[in-house]
Image (cartoon, rainbow, N blue to C red; front, side):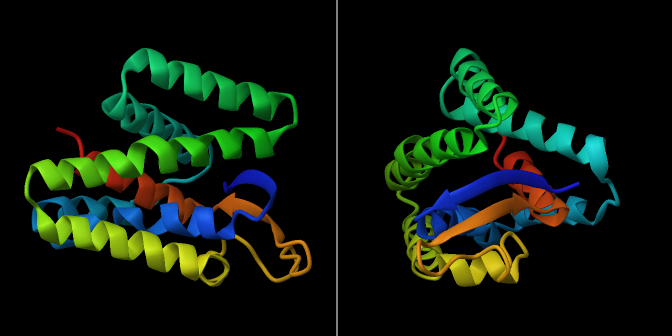
Length: 173
């Protein structure tokens, strides 16, 4: 079952940039092997639960368990109050201000120039071609995309959820 993030304005570059940051896993064969798990046929509540748990772990790895609980509780509350856009905005703010800068920081202190270049390039390409990528990955469609006010209903389809889970597993320390 796809997760509905609500209708967002001006977000396609932000979502597109986040979308591709995990491409850095492709330059490490050990990490890339985790993506085989994306072929496992899980769906529905089981997949959504695994996605949520992986998101919790991913954020806890960046920050700590308490911060991850608070962030996810805030997002859950916004969804419960039928304000998905607020939850998605919070998650995008976190990804752009904490998660992706931490990835760049770690690649810098580890003197991993190739990872740094791949992360920066994928974020730039994702940001530049956000709506195109989101359409190709079935996260938005032409029916929902409003070119005038640049808003779209964004969903995370099952395949994208599986890829996020693989990204998290590949980056566990």
